[in-house]
Length: 297
Image (tube, rainbow, N blue to C red):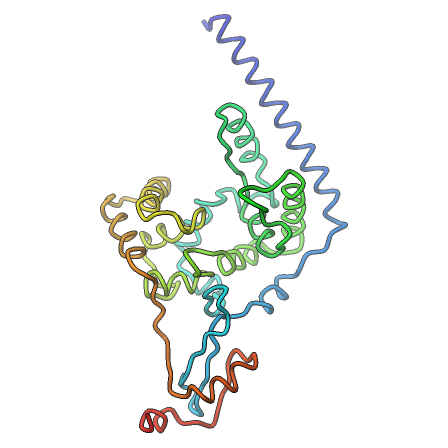
């Protein structure tokens, strides 16, 4: 039989858990009522506003003859659809960032309650942001933390925005926008730039181990290589992967040991590119011939 002390402790924990659940549920209901009063950008508008960081000049045969970096705020390549991305990466992202993503409506009450209990008992802050909440903060700059963490008011608005996002977007749209808009390492933004820059591959060609490493970067993109390796190994264990730890560490080292590389630079028509691409075009087809340009240079 349980001692009276254990019974008392269990009763306190039960009451605490019930109170936390009631508070979380009440907050969720209150937030849901506010959703109808706020507007949210459509998936189509967000995707249409996406811009790559490098403009491309094509010759008459549609061959790339020059690339010009037009945005120094981040390195972004073409938008990647979900079908362009390795399924193992999508599964790993959900496992790492929001394992109940397919079933919740923007806020994970169980994760929220767990975070409250963790923060109250251990004195260390742990977040409970879902993929939808993170995406809402990427889309709306006002929801990004001012400093190291968000204030309560800002967190509340983030919850409401996530609920609104889930109400008007499909789950696949949320996941697709998320992997294309978040930062992975340094200036690498979006899944295609991260895949090309860290592994020299298209997003569809990553192995499971490489997917694990890349997903591990989301929480803390610029963490030291050793910390990323540890996080990747733990994530591999959570995913039930039968992989040796040194294989995970090797993949992490290969991805992060040196500066990233994206190798599609072409420089056959610098003067034309500066005149045409600097005006704001992302891609321009010219009457130039790449073969003649190579000969001339």
